[in-house]
Amino acid sequence: MAFCLLLACPKLPEQPEKAYPAERVYEFSFEEVWATTIKVVGDEFDYPLSAIEKASGVIHTDFRSEVRSPLYYNQKRSRLSIYVEEIEKGKTIVKITNHVEVLHEPVGPSPPIWHVISSDKTRELDILKRIGERLTSP
Image 1 (cartoon, one colour):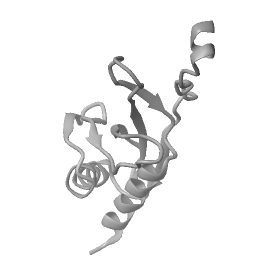
Image 2: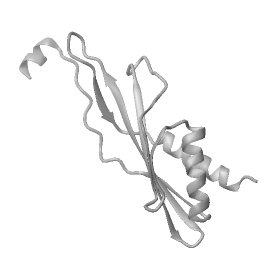
Image 3: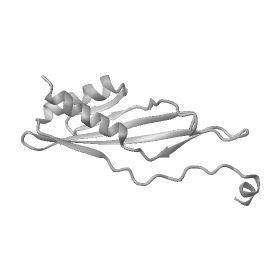
Image 4: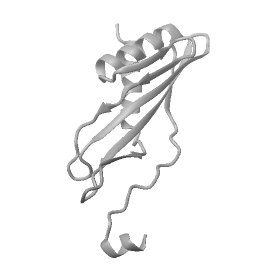
């Protein structure tokens, strides 16, 4: 550690706080919300679906690369964990947790390392909004 202080080694990102899902309740059946969620996440937001377990209400995606921000990181990726549950007849909740990572490329011979960062919830809220729009459109 003292060695890094003397050489001004870059500080690695701190571990993010525990991720809490973004969630929304829809006044629609599980079947309607389930099908719409899969379409929105896979087709409109272009996440590769890796696990779809309808009986347990779980959807997982693989990582998807994000738009690059040259001021802060070279690469960013995210994957989603989604839980869909009918909480009462005709009322279904969707919970989305976004697992976000950025690539830290240290100076020198050290290999690049992916670091977990906290989601700002923008993507999750956009998906939840779009699910609602799709459910209420003719």
